[in-house]
Image (tube, rainbow, N blue to C red):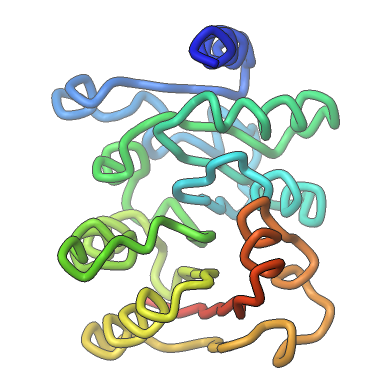
Length: 220
């Protein structure tokens, strides 16, 4: 297993749409593409969508196919997981996808003010109540997103976890954000759209266990 992981790390580094940098490097200087993703990397000025903790990047890849006039960046710290999505991008020859291996806690060092149009958070680690600051919708992270999202930029959350979902609703209320959409069971409350059409690996597991999938979107 360790050898397979190392092979994936080496393999993904050869992809032109995969980028990475170290924790200490980012603390000293901003990521070279900060503020320049559209102009220097994607070579267009289409909307920029970021998926945080993208894992195998099912959402990043699928949305890139659905919306060719948008740019997508999958962000995670585990390159071997992103390898799965990266290979799919290579196979499909998608030109509107990039992968970025960096700590999410330093995300504001990778994107400039008002550079990102939307953030997607799909089935993140819900974290126990004793570690709420590590939740990707906690104030610790929300304040980072505020630095990179455009005015009226959107944040999407899709989860099976009731506590994380309700916690995020409280954060939205406390920050006085605008709640755009709120579904406690997407397969009962929504029609056939991008939220129900794309099922991640973990989503399929939760559904097989009878869990309900929740979704919300809010505007900063």
